[in-house]
Structure formats: C-alpha cells, structure tokens
Length: 415
Image (cartoon, rainbow, N blue to C red; front, top):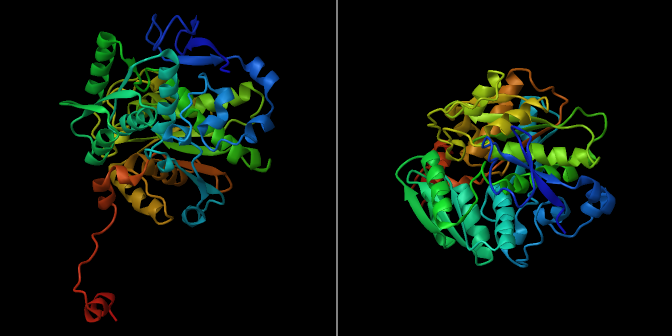
C-alpha cells in the first residue's frame, strides 16, 4: 500500500493533492516534492521491518515509495538497485583516508543509477494506465527507461542528441524502444519531449520534471543508510558522500531519501553531500559558489556526457542538497575525470566519465582540506564504463601488439 498523500512545490511550498498535478508546480514551474504519510509509515513499520525484507532490489523499500507494487516478477524491473558497496583501501591509502567506499551503480540492469528512477516511473505509468512513456536522454536515462519498459512490455519513446555515445544508442535500440535522434543537445531533446508529451498524451519521464524520478533515486540513500550508516560506529564523523551532478536529480534524490529517513526518526546524523561537476558543465556549482539558487544556463561541452547539461532542470534542489547538509560543490577538469577512470579501474570498478568525476572531486576536496583523514567517505560511481568506451580508452595507454612468439614476448618484457 502506498502512503503517497500529495505534492509540495520546492519553490513556493504550495501543496497539491495527487490528482491535481502531474509534473511541476502550475504556479512557478518548481519541482514537486512527494509528501508521504510519515506518521502512518512509522505506525506500521519499524526499522527491522524494512531491513529484514527479502527483496534484494530497490523494491525492498516499497513501503517508503509513492507507488504500488508494479509486479514484473522475474524481470529486470525487479532487480534495479541494491548495488554493491566496496571498501577500497588501495584508493584510500594514497589519499590518507582510513575509510573509503565506492558504491557501484554500474551493476544495475542497464548499468547506471538511472535504472532506479525508471523502475519507479514505469511502476507509476502502469499504475495510471499510460500506454507510452517518453523521455529525453543523453543515453543512460533512456537506456534505463527502455530496459525497464521492455521488461514488462511497456512502450518507450526516447529522444537523444545525435552526439550521444554509440554504446548508449545501441542499448536503446536493442531494448526495443522507439529512438529518435535530435540534431541538437540534451536541452533541445528535453524541450521536444515535453512538447510531444503534451501533444500525444504520452507519460513523460524527463528528469527534473517528473516528480517520481527523485523517488526512485532516493532509494540509493536508503541503501547507504542500511548497508553503511546503521553499521558505522558513533565515534565517526558524518559520512561524506561524493556524487556527480548534471541535471541535479540524483543528488536531489539522495537528499530526499535521507530527509525521509529523518522524518521517520530512523536517521540521526545527516550525511554531508558533495556535488561534483565538470568545469565545462557547472551551472549548479556556479549557483552554489554565488550563494544563490538562480540557475544560469551554461554551454556544456564536457566529455562526461551524462552530466553535460546546459540548464539543469533540478538545479535548485541540487544546490540545497549540498548547502543543507554541510556539503559543498567542486568542479573538476575533463582531464581529471579521464585520469580518475583509470585510477578507479585499478580496484576493479569500471566507471564512465560521470561516475569517475565523483572520485576526481574527492581528490580535489582532499587537496583543499575539506575532508578530514578520519572522515568516512563514500563515492558513487553512477554508471558503467562500458557506456563510453572512447572515454575509457583515453584513460589508459594502448595495448602493445607483438608477434605470437616467446622471443617477442621476452623482448617486450625486457627479459
């Protein structure tokens, strides 16, 4: 049973019943926050009722989500989330950190954090009887929607920039989505998606527009809480979380998840959330640095396509996620992002550029003295490096080619 009781505008705080709105605030276009009946949840559930559930996916948190059970048993829709968290001492030691973890979202069904949002949006689409769900994407959100929709026979339409990496376009097509490449950037695809949704009555998944996306992405916070925060000794400082930021929806979702847990009385200390952007796509960071919530568009050119956004559609909440948790924003160069791909790879985690940006941000934060050596730190890799092989190859040297003889091998090895 869903305890979803309404929406609240993140800007003007106007409240709406579930049937009054669908996407954003009619008054000012602000992103809508879901309001749950926290008292009813507290009355019905204790922490152990959640942490002992048998689902090893985001659906173990169904009592804390604004959708009813979507079904889809034995499909990939039921396996989104519950990604592994690795303690990476070999990455921690050069930084002087005692406790460093990486949560690898590349292990999701379509290999990115976006599966969380798409699973919940598809659940909502089924709940309201939508025939088609549409989204704009540079690749990951579209692949997530295409994969989750395909799992339950739902129709998906994806608008993507023609410059999106081919590996991501291949995913969209293989999952059977209707794919339309736009001769423009992500923002142009975003605007066209909304127009098409209004014209054809399609259900729009767009990030930073459909409020159910944050609800899916907040499940990452629930997993961090269950797998890490509940087990951290009291002596530790608050956990510091590093995550890359593009449109701002993932960092907003993490913040929403932790706020939900606090409203339930299940979380004591709020983690510090650090948002990392490329300096070639830094609209949210610029607002944070200016002490403002005004998101001024930029011309994004970063190699990290998943966070390459001119106008972040969830920018205000993204600024607040860092500001209200004692975190910060940092920007990193594309060169630092590429270098971080290879560094993370040395511990067996293959990160796409957007995911590696978070680790590059941690290194910068360490150099600036923003993180103490005793502070526990979690870095989120938001997607698999298989999403963008061209970028991955830039982080490493080319493999040598030798003749298939022992003599040639010895020569190469200098033996």
